[in-house]
Each structure stands twice: as structure tokens, then as C-alpha cells.
Length: 452
Image 1: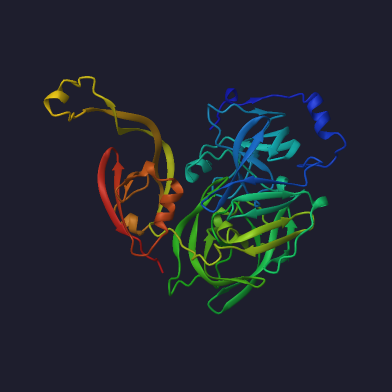
Image 2: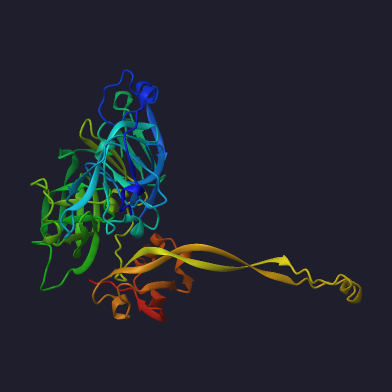
């Protein structure tokens, strides 16, 4: 993470002729597509239910999270090897979800940000210095920032979670095709964020709620008020790590909703989380908001968001009937630096071969091969958090432990999302781990179990 000014060079860029060409005849604020482009399609990576896109900022290629839940563009997780030009930079304070309060940041104006063919030539953004907010370690790939409302506000954006394609449409040239299996709903836009009304059911309780559409949350549903949903007598929840906010980690309760209904779309046995209120106190919310709907629900649809008309259109996809699983291990892992890996490869002739041996063995020659090794750097995974009384905790695994192998396979041969998927797979699955604690390696084993 950048800590000193020599790691980010903040200065004015005179755009000159370039800006004149780009902006000639164009006065719209924010992102736009060139006049000859009716729509643009880009590919994305889907990691832990989240959409990760390539962007270009002042000529530097970066990777951003596409997040409908944020108002402004935020940059973080820059490293010493990153060289990034920022303009009109000044220090400020930011507040967000989490218990840590405000954090130091830079605000930078008059930047050029490109997403595919869409471009904003006067883009404002924030740079966070706090090392504790680093999505890269929890995602397993470099994530340099987040972009949301500023990209969505001028376009119609379609996210296809199956093909992993985002299509950006110019509203002036867009004609929506008839779709019998689609449903369109009104958006409530407050403080530059989109909200939707839907019905949720928990046992005999049915309630209409207003939820933030938050594509930057990998969860299903967050609700701020647990009254009527949490039963202390017949315990129907467990305490867990919920996620990472600008101001620190967020913890709370997890439970299950009987169903949710979005128009005619019905989803059953839906995961729900109730963040502890102390992690929300630093943030001012739209007063009518009851919580958030996250990417684990959004990914079950092709999602068309039309900010100019304040509409959202949903069409269910092949993920729709997938069960709502949760991490049964109790482990939250993160990428923590790298390790040097030495892999044995077969190859290379031994120069000591005696050709005359062929005459002595009727033409049969045994060719000795040298052992060749490949050396490379691979990710190191540690336990960032562990749920109390979870299978992993009862097996003796602790926060800070290094996970060396899982079920006989070195962890560096897994992608982080593959490990997360493994921990959320089948009830009764046995997990075997080699774990490093203060340099001492031990073997641990546990079985994935439902909490309730």
C-alpha cells in the first residue's frame, strides 16, 4: 500500500489537443461512449460472486471491482511497483462501514478513466492509504479499486453472469427487446445509490423491505433489524465474520430466510446476515433502507440496470436454482505474501552417457536423465478470521496460522475462491489440512457441518 508521496506521483496533466478531440461537441458530465459507438461489451472475472473488470486510469491498466453500492471511485491496494499519475490531489478523511472510524485518503480530480470504450475525461476519485483495507488479499488477485455510480449513471448496463460479459448501452440508441421471461422493476435512487422493494419471509413473518442493490457484496441479503428473524430460544443463527468495510472488518449473525420474492421470482432458503450495529454507526443511511441485496442473489439473473429511467430488469439464469451455501468450516482465509516453490521436473540428458553401451546390450540403451527444478513464487494463505466453535476452531486451527495443504494438495495450487468453494460444499465432507503455527507444522482434520 502506498504510504509516502514518492510512491504516487500526484501532478497536473495538461491534456491539450487530446481533450479537445475527445470532448469536441460533448458537454455531458461523466462517462460517455463516442458518438459512433451504440454499445460496448467487455469481459469480466467473477470471483466470490463479485464482478472484476479491467480499467485504464491516466494510461495505467488496473483492475477494479464493479460495485453498485458505492457513490465515488476509490483506489486502494497500490504497491511500490505501481506507477500511477493522479491529478489535483489533496488530503481528506473518509468514513465507511466498520468499527475503525474515519481513515486518511487523497481526493484527486481531472483524471481520465476508461472502461472499455466508455470514457470520463474529468473523473474524480479517492485514494485510500490504510493497509487494513485490502480486497486483494481476500480475493486472491490484485484489486486496485472500486467504481460504481459514476459509471452507471449515464448508461444502461447489462451484466450477464453466465457469459461473464458486461454490455454498456447508450440510452439514446437503446431499444429494449421484448422478453417474456424478464421482469422490470422501479429503482429508488437515493444519494446516487439504487434501491429496490421486495418481500421477505421468515417463518410466519412476511415483510416488504427496501434494500440497496449492492453488487459489491458477495452475500445474499443483509438486514439491519434482526427483530422477528432471530430466535434466541430455538437458536437459528451463528456469529460470523461478514465482510470488510472501509473502516474495518464487520461481524454479525447469519441465519436463513424462508424465502424472498422479487416480483414473480421466488428464492427459497436464502442466507441472511445481520451486521452488529456498532459496525454501522459511522455511516449515514437512507432512512427507509432495511438492508442490502448482494451479488449471491444478483448472479442468479441477467441484470439490466437503467439509471436514466430508474429501472432494473431481471431474467433468471442457470444459477437461479443453486442452493444458498455458507462457509461451514468457520475459516476466513487471505493471501499473505508469497513463498518460494521448488518443483521437480523430468528433463535434461545426463552428459555422462556412454554410447558404446548400445553395442554391449544389443542396441538397448538406458538414458539417465538429470533432475530439473523450476523455482517460482506462489501465494501464501493464512487464517484471517475464524468462527468460534466452528469445525476448524474445534480442530485447533487459530487466527494467523498458515494453511500449507488441503486434502493432500498444496494450497498454492488452489485459487483462493476454490478454497472458499470447498469450505461451502457438501455437509459431511472431510477436510484434512497441514497447518503451520510459528514454524511448527501439524496435521488437522474436521468435517463440514451445518450450524442449524
